[in-house]
Length: 153
Picture (cartoon, one colour):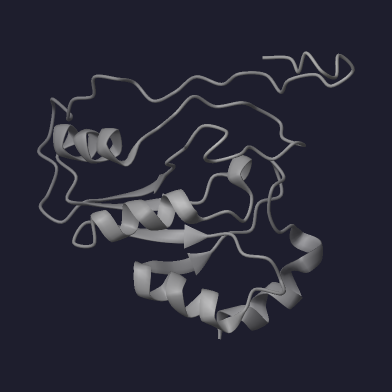
């Protein structure tokens, strides 16, 4: 939706949300312990603001709908990847990880000056990696990989 207070700012194009009614494969059985390795939870402004400079505008995608998709498709576990539109604001993903500790892990986006206490809290919540995103903004690009690598130790 365009900003009525600033007509020169164009809204990033919308992108489709997840399919609301998922089902598992019909030609094979998903093995126990299967992991969906890349999904996002997305909150809506004002509670979860979007990055002003972004390449798309997504609809809401809740942790509850993601867990329902895992169940419907026969997946045991999932990995949430911090979505670019929320930048380094990992709050929603961390809330989802804490609510579903037995099934979910996360990949966060953190600033290079992230305090040690925040890194520890992310790890305790279930974050197991850091995201580099060169396509959609809102995170760390290749030009910062060396600096970012030191945060992973």
